[in-house]
Length: 629
Image 1 (cartoon, rainbow, N blue to C red):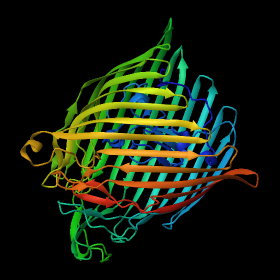
Image 2 (tube, rainbow, N blue to C red; image 1 turned 120 degrees about the vertical axis):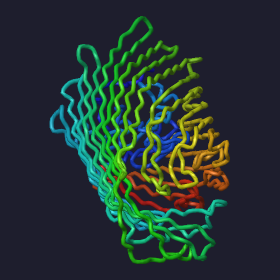
Image 3 (tube, helix red, strand yellow; image 1 turned 180 degrees about the vertical axis):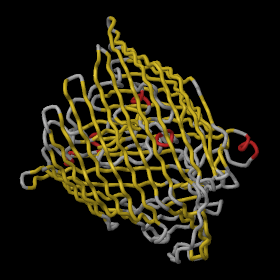
Image 4 (cartoon, helix red, strand yellow; image 1 turned 135 degrees about the vertical axis):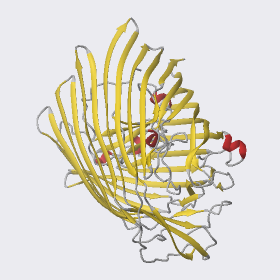
């Protein structure tokens, strides 16, 4: 199984919205998104306790992309998390996993899809997607959506999305795509972050009660655009991608509530900042040659990547508000803020390397890679420039898979990477600051079994990287080294006609090492890395029936809520149930989707940083109508 790291994409994209079904479309239980519904153990911000997004491990159809702002769902139809065996075929895989997005590409037939959605929080959404083949070789597509989004904390926002994609296929060995998208989030009320007492999680709050300030809002604009070209020249496969990603936040706010007994006076803090800006130009060029010698198929690739990233942040001011009864709204006039000078940073990074993959028919495959990376980061604060950070490592990876039997294969890999760290959280005095890139490494191994219609994957992993966190002085800085070891498993398939099951679990042992741990300044467990996570999803559609029902049960295990490891966060379990009914409206295929999330109204705390918490989303009912005209 050689991965298509440099391939032509000539198949029509599935643009029809009435066919969206995250469970039925899942490849495994490690993480995916289809039609806006998330499924599986991992997501773009959480893979094995780390974030592929924050680490910079983002791809658009396999091509390196330095993402600064979320990709609009009018531009992409979903994503896949590449980890374990699904990452084996990627040239230069990443220790923190890869999130790979799929563009909404116009096909050979005209299409028009519309979606209308409402939910029990009072939110509403309208989406329109269209595609038009201009000629046999060229097609255009685009989409627009507008929503009044209502959130669990009682806050809301007005969001508009628009996107356009053009696809050109002049021959069977050439494919080009050009895309653009814009997202605007207006009047987004900021939900409060609850700061604990350092001993236990906060008292239970009434959900959907807005405890922030109505003037404490934020407006955001995001732009993502670029081009991908794949072709063959003289027997060589060539892939090129060039992208621009911009995230612009106008004057924004953060609200913090200090936990107390329900109804007791509690301190409150609000901070404002004069906006922040992140922009990056990134790209990749790859050249590949494939040839065979007997039963061996070889692929040799040269891949070069680069990015030019510039950010502006900081300059905010925090002000104490009058105390208020904890858990009850208490609104005040907006204070006058005086902003300080902001910080800017600039990252320039390039890499070039060779990858070799060999596929021995019906026996197994081998993948080797080596690359040279050049990294430079400069930071300028109000007091002047800081010392420039540089790193120029050699990175390598090796992966192998062997077919033990016709149904059982074994896999293993070792990868070294240079990845970005998380930025400083909202609770840190140096919020939004990003440390220099981190040298990371990962070792994983496991087995993949095909048991009739069921695919089973099980493995173990060991990841090491520097650890950054918030210290006792509320400064985000390096506190030591983190090591995440664990096991994970995925089961997917159709055990019975009409029944699709996707289930997975991960058990993780995360530990910290270094002087801060040895001195007792921090505990030996990182903040916000749950010890386990279990997910079971099933979709059942009786034969010849127009109706299907689905069920998802998700369990999040115990967690650590503070750097000293004194706050233990209880596990929680949520249950979602849903129904799809397929019908025709004026001759057009349509589907009615009704889903109740957290149907048992389970209450839990999510960790937002050191001794900082946000409650889980309460029960919600969503009704959705999709029509393919």
